Image (cartoon, rainbow, N blue to C red; front, side, top):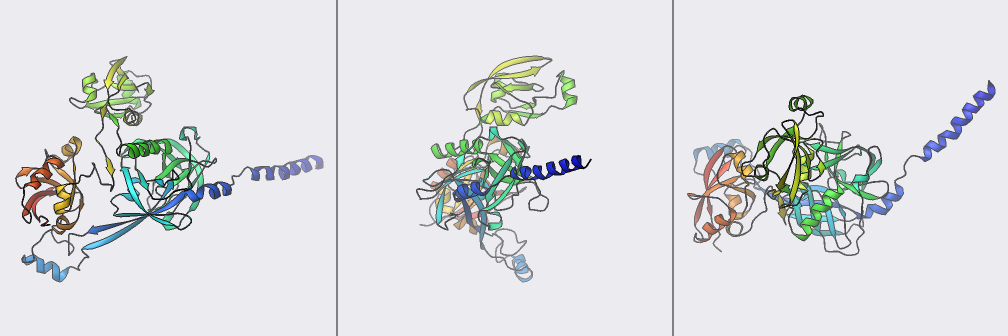
Length: 464
């Protein structure tokens, strides 16, 4: 009996060091890869159109209510500088850096600080809000760079390391495991997120997620939280998705994605039974855009798309990613379930309207320059058909940025310009052509919609 007890104790003593050796050591990884991780700080000058809280934009000083707001509402600064912090990582020795689009969105200046304390003013090469990826460039050479990994080889349960600047604390290291792969998040249809339990907090955005081989497998992008801080659910953009976006931004300045022109929903068990499917799989078509690629190919409401271009659609969230990754203009085979039978049709992939910004990122389309910027400080972009439908308008331009005369008149980012004078604003190009014909120093009336209300705002054109 004593011999058996001694043997058990001996086994426990021998086994304990073996288990301890299996715990991961991140020191070499951090020492080698840490110098390629950077801190990104941005500044943005925001114009406050309301001098006093609650005052309607553009209220005249002679208005009786102006004196009321002046007396009883505390004054607000007209111009305010906002600062934000994020992270990024160097992908080439000549200074190309990846980060999140939301880190540099709307920034007037972008500053990159390296681990050796050197600081550089960065240029935003481009940003894609759909993938939340931005490519920035600093004028430097011989920089340390990360090694790009393959997220397809990631396994749920394996260790990963995040390096970034949470709350401005440079090169903070946290570790965790891969909690899940291919996660879909609300309003994020084009990214199969990597879920981890590595601690991610504000400031970590744009930083790298490493595997144990020291390869970047993702960009830390979002967290699920009820408190504003880390709660154990962090999400990273797979690096292959990010690099594809970065390469397109670097070579063409924009990102192209395929589209079908359908509205889809998940196939539940009950829906699968009602359509005669043996398994709840695929994407159920609930609407087909008239004249769109799917309509031209013959896809109909109630079809269940099972495969697209040879790739299996396991759930409805798979389809937007597969279609978006397909080159516009490609002819593909779509396998679908219709009236109890499998059917294959050929579809020519359309192009998804751009949500890419060159230079300074905006909110929707590519920000246009021209007369509106030079003469009134108003950066505009075209609305796509889906946005017009949502706003229930036939014409309009989105205000991306305001400065100078436009800012002084009270216009704000997110406003929609419906008309210039009595001429509907149908495109940025048309708007600028109309503006060219108006003499210097004249007042121009813009019909501006904010929320559900629309009103004319007068803007005096630059006299220079």
